Figure 1 (cartoon, rainbow, N blue to C red):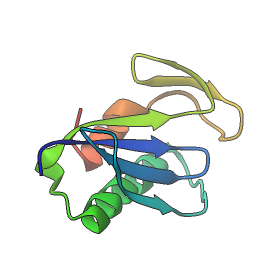
Figure 2 (cartoon, helix red, strand yellow):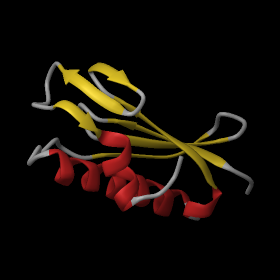
Figure 3 (cartoon, rainbow, N blue to C red):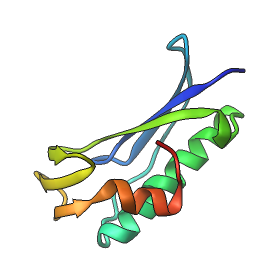
Length: 102
């Protein structure tokens, strides 16, 4: 199949997986149930896995993951958000504990 890109929208906990040519391979949504940064990162990683599974894509074929956050981010650290109670949280490192993809 080649490689794919995963995109996660953290405000609504939605995920999509796209092929190199831009075709959407799968999309998954679930309601936001924020229970702290660690659980949030784990939920996003599970959502990415579920999306890959629905698309029939192995995790090894995912080239990168992008996470959209409604707020300000610097170098993988959430500085603040507008709708999720997080400030100064390194979401990149939390996410990579559960799914180690760039």
